[in-house]
Length: 175
Ligand code: SF4
Ligand SMILES: [Zn+2]
Ligand SMILES: [Zn+2]
Image (cartoon, rainbow, N blue to C red):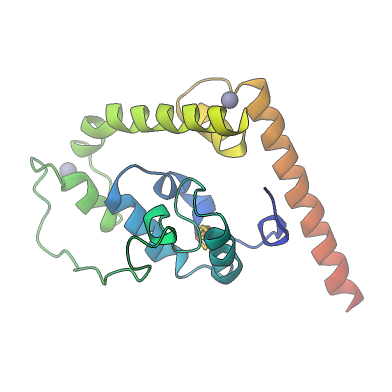
């Protein structure tokens, strides 16, 4: 379902790195929650999230678990990592991400899992919606041509966003 705030042209953190918002990794989801807390659309998005607890992914700073009341919605403050990352450790990839780094050792090692997560996300989008904008980006990230349903859904969302931006401009000009 698309609502008014979703159509607004406001920049939101989840547009830049949507994978975090739909990741199967708890650490990614916590990073998404932290980013949501800086988002100008946090309030309407959180209202939407509470009204749609079963939506997949993080919405309005709330994980699906938090929305269904199983955990506290307040993110725990993060410990800052200052020690050098040990690239042989299983958590090195996430440590790099938290520091905003990329790594020639950790990225290729993690690539198969990332592809598997993308494929799983795409399968969920197809099962739930037939095609969707998230599905479109998952196809592209997987290095394949988006299917017709996802391409159409993406075109619709972009057209909605453009129309909403035009409306906003008109409202501002008229004010
Ligand atoms: S609050 Fe909503 S719109 Fe903002 S970053 Fe989080 S999920 Fe995206
Ligand atoms: Zn590394
Ligand atoms: Zn598709």
